[in-house]
Amino acid sequence: MQGTALPVSWPNAKVLATWTTKVGGAPANAFAVRSGDQILLQFEVADRVFFNNPVVRNAVAAKGSYETRDNNVQVLALPLQRGGILLVGPAGSLPPATGISVKKF
Image 1 (cartoon, rainbow, N blue to C red):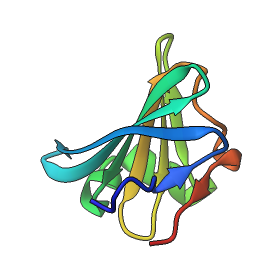
Image 2 (tube, rainbow, N blue to C red; image 1 turned 60 degrees about the horizontal axis):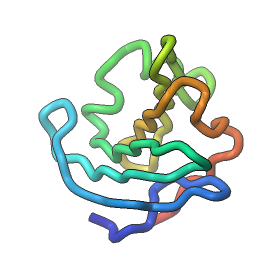
Image 3 (tube, rainbow, N blue to C red; image 1 turned 30 degrees about the vertical axis):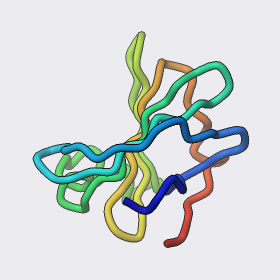
Image 4 (cartoon, rainbow, N blue to C red; image 1 turned 90 degrees about the vertical axis):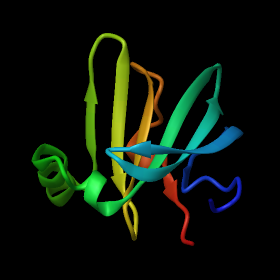
């Protein structure tokens, strides 16, 4: 892992915990992040996982990010230099993509 530095951050984001896991069968760095009164999960995933879904791939190519939500959960997918970030939280709790800064490693 890259330490506790978030790959993507926004004002008032605070890392609470980090760990490694698997997403799509590939290793991923995971971060629990406090944002206001919410806890969000941030997963740093490999290229082959991030770009595997054609809907995500096309949205990222067209507008630089992918976002989906249902009544309870919201997901924002942002590309990194290598791989990408999946930011997951309660619907309506994620920062806007325009307010997120990408850390350069």
